Image (cartoon, rainbow, N blue to C red; front, side, top):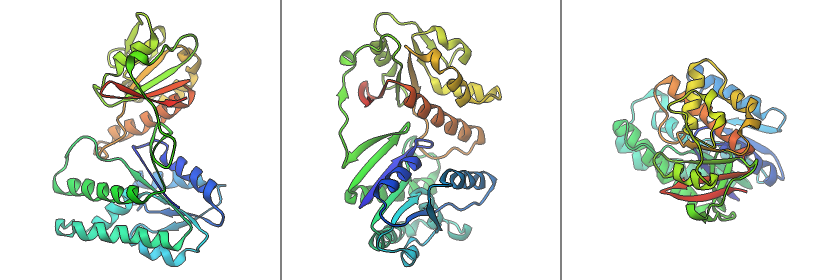
Length: 323
């Protein structure tokens, strides 16, 4: 079986991949690690993933390049979790720190994809995790543009062949192939949140989320814009917008954003919270922006888990992801 999972930073895709591996495995579970711990930040990420896998009975195979070489290590009954394709692609593009040659683009796509095919041919199940880096346009010239091109085309090749393909958002899988479909919900039919139900609405910037959230809240709801007020002032409102800005403000205060929302979870009952998706696209150069994206992803996963209803809004049209 081939499973393809993609999503933004801290979207829960690795946890979903591990869950899939646990369900599918009849033999060994192989964690195919592609990261190169080239600096302090990356070393901390690698160590965190190792801690997260402790006690889950994975055999770790570190193969940051030349995926086809892993086939010799595998057995027919293995379930392989490759995390992640984005790192593997970057490592192949900049082998040994050498400059990227744009003339190699087509050859790189063929090499990486054939390597994945070799891995799939040597095991029972292959689960490939990758990153959504395709938002925000072309931000960095030929190298970043080609990285998006190579990774995007690999995504298409994998999704075409996958038995199960899903996008992971806020810890919730949105199945594109092989899973249950989600129903589109027009704003006027969205229903009311009411009572103690908590709703979480998210989507891209300027996609009609506020109007959609006001429909969910019903009546004439009081709105708190966290882009304009401190996070501590949100609790008297019915609709709370720009959750991502609250996360940034808390980080600047030196506070733990996830802990703040956990401690105040009961005070969020009966409210509609609204946030922008900021976890997709090319990883920012600025260290604070990277941390902000990471922490926002963690907070969104928590809110989605706590909420009675979760809707994703695109161009004013909502898709209910939960319940």
